[in-house]
Length: 336
Image (cartoon, rainbow, N blue to C red; front, top):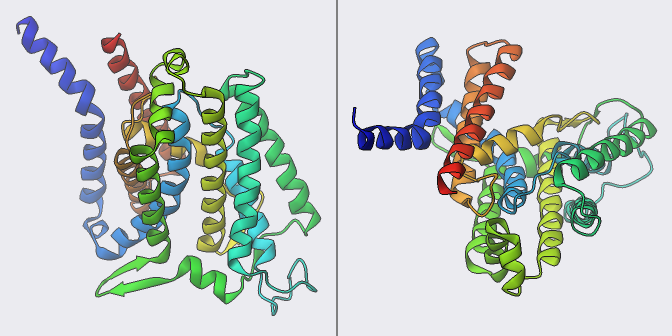
């Protein structure tokens, strides 16, 4: 094998090796149970992917700027618990606020998104003004948010918050029947979020600034980009996406606890990397993020469908994450 052929083979493996592994996993899943390939399962995968897409879109913007966010899951959990306590049915005997009427859904969305924006703003300020690395900054806020959520959860009764108002249940669990396929409302919300983020990334100055900052922060600053303001903006926006995702997730599941959202950040980050968002910064696409989430959810759902132990699932998912980051690193080395 000559040097040119070897070089081409190396590039091919860097670009497609992970997808071959994922395809192999899918083949194993289908071979174990061919009923996996059904419209019902496809609908379920799309629904489960939809909330993950919204959450991943939030963290993707941070990865593009060479950042990250370990507080994702805890922000999702806090928003879920807050929304759940405000949207329980009046007929629910275990309603945590029995004398309070059901809060209108748009108001609850605004409230949880405002909470998410504040948390994102705090993360952004810690990273930019205090110059703390994103990993450490969001590790700290992850613990703080979980503590706040747990205190609130204990205050309202320390039991799964369920028995939601029918309007909330319909908003998050409703679907449009298309023959044998069910298109969930949540999937429609995710599509709207995807379009909004695509426009933001590709058609606005803010989006172009994010990629400039991710590619070379110093060069972006010299070019007149307000790096601090843009980073604060993307962290704030990410908090809004996590919050909306948490609002939808509580309604989709039908209950909420302070542990909802645990490890969601790992799935979101992994999906972004699988979808081509580079940790080296400045590289990524909204379509790639969506594909990454779909692939990761497909594998998660498929492994559960054929009865693979959750412990093995952790090992497989961890291996996929390591492979994705390793391949990304190898690509980055080549560019340098």
